[in-house]
Structure formats: C-alpha cells, structure tokens
Image 1 (cartoon, helix red, strand yellow):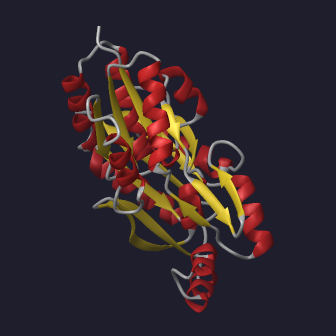
Image 2: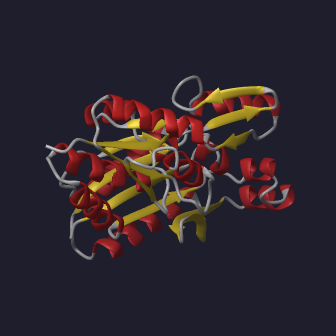
Image 3: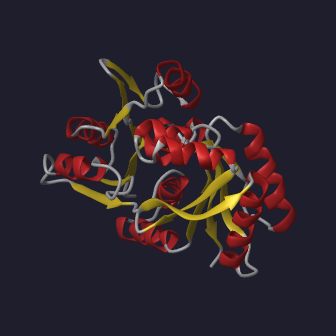
Length: 284
C-alpha cells in the first residue's frame, strides 16, 4: 500500500494530540522580538507572546519557515518510508510559507511531493490537513487524498470576533485614535476568511451581539445541515471559547467531537489577545 505523508505549518492551529494521532509533520513559523527569536510550537505560545507584547508595548515580526526547514521535513518523511508527500500550507495571500515549500520541493525532482495552497488559515487550513491525513491513513492513493482535500475545501467556513483593536494599533494596521474610539464604543469587528485573507466582515456593538451575529451567519451557511467538523478558535480566551461552544451546541449538531484550539502565535499577533471564533466543515 502506498504510504502518503502529510506535512503542514504551525499556522494550521492543529493541537499536539491531533498531530500525533495522524502522524502529521508540522514546520514552524518563527517569531522575532528584535534579536530574540522563538519557534511556534516549541518555545512560544499565545499566552507567552502576549505577555511579552504587553511588557514591551511592541508587536513582533513573524517569519515563514525557510525552504531548508521544509526540505528537512520532506527528507524525514521519505526516510520514514513515505512514497509521496502532501504538504498543505497557510494561504499564500498572507505568508511566504507556500513559496518556501515550493522551493523545497524543487530539491526532490524525482520524488512525489504535492504542495497545496490552503487559501485559508488556522483550523480552516487544519481541517484540510486532517482530511488529507485521514484519507492517507485509510489507504487512499495520492489522487484520492488530493480529492479529499478539495472536497473539504469547498465546505469550510471561518468566523472570528476581535476583542480589541489595541494590538492592531500597536502593529500600525489601524490608528491609535481609531482603536481607542472603537474600544470606547465597545465595537467588535467580525472577521471571516475571504479570498485567502482574514478580513473584516462587519462592525458590531458589544461582544455578545458579535457572537450572536457569528452564530446567525454560520446558521445561514449550514442551511439546516449539521457540522461535519467544528473547531472553536481562541487567543487566551478559554472561557469565551467554552461559551461559544455551548451556544453553538444549543443551535446545531456536529457529527464529530468539537475541538478547542489556540489560534497560535504566527496568526494571533495580527489579531490580538481575546479573539474567539470558529472554523467549520459543513456536511455535504
């Protein structure tokens, strides 16, 4: 039977237990506070990164994995017996990760490596990775694994609510005055993934109204169907994540266990502490 390995990056927000269960290799994003560098999934997480941001009053920079990092992951997969690799990367619209993986692929001209642009992020990307890994585990060939990824891609929805614009102001993405006014008025931007980017969908007054609106939007997407998969995403907001999980459970059914996942530092630095959201795969 053909052995297909699945590789991704840490922007997929996949928790360690899922990576271990599906034998998924994850190539890390790095975080830079000046001369100090940290590796996602190793020595930095959402809690620690915002402790440093609040202390320094400065947003760090993020760096995509190098081609060498992807090449090392590919080499390990082949050494472990893989005949083919499927590598699913965070959206090329927000990161150079996909290009780095493509460059690494060129170092293996005689080997079978498919590099896929998720055109999504966090668990919107993670669910594509899981679809590939499950298909490979169940004995699918390469063509069938790729079909599973594409079939899942069409049914993914991602929504999130920002808790504050303070961190976007620190990054220079919005002005400090605008951020202060928005926070004073208790405005909560509602985000979605559109064309491979996390973009603002609406501005809603109060967090609860924003969460209610998110539930309304996902209900419209479901059109009476169940969730096939559902992940609650958060940045240092486990209580908000549990609350959202309970609200969704009161309205909808999910055919698999609901996951609660950290957004992870490569993404959370751009959204800010307190974010809560969801990524879902709707049933066909």
